[in-house]
Length: 218
Image 1 (cartoon, rainbow, N blue to C red):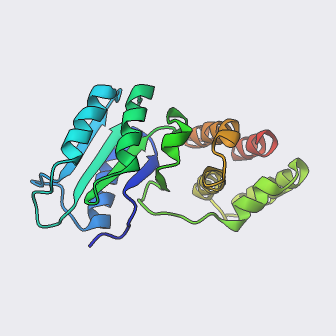
Image 2: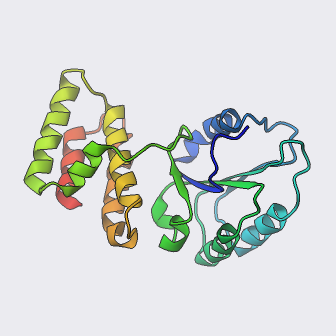
């Protein structure tokens, strides 16, 4: 049985995770992809209006298996505005049996109206709640944020935290902003966070510098 009632989900991640996403989705939904006509996986360098129309036609068909679900995992590197508007219409009234998972490298590729229709998941397909620490960080003054960063970096130096914890912290901050009342109002801050997170994946990133950049820029 399915573990989520969300019809449309967003995963902000690089293409390097695509193979893992398929495995995670199989595990999440307890449905195998191999030989399954209702489990569609597509990769798009550029998702256009033609691809959106094809997706709509496929989604409006009925499931062919006993699962009663149609799964669409879309790995999208870029998407046109026209395609987003078409996709928005599909997600406003999705077929009750369809589940959509969009993997994109940056949420800023999406229009705010489309982002608002998508449930944000992490790369492990889990919906993580907004962490209180992230919410406090957003509301704090710049000087207080820098103090939080110093404490965070000190914990890393003492092996109490890792780089993965820093990436998760950025995810939590982004998620807290993403779920706010106005995504558009936080557009610049969200882009700053994603830039920092991208550099955080380097082999030897300056975690302190990146977190301070976020602390002073959002």
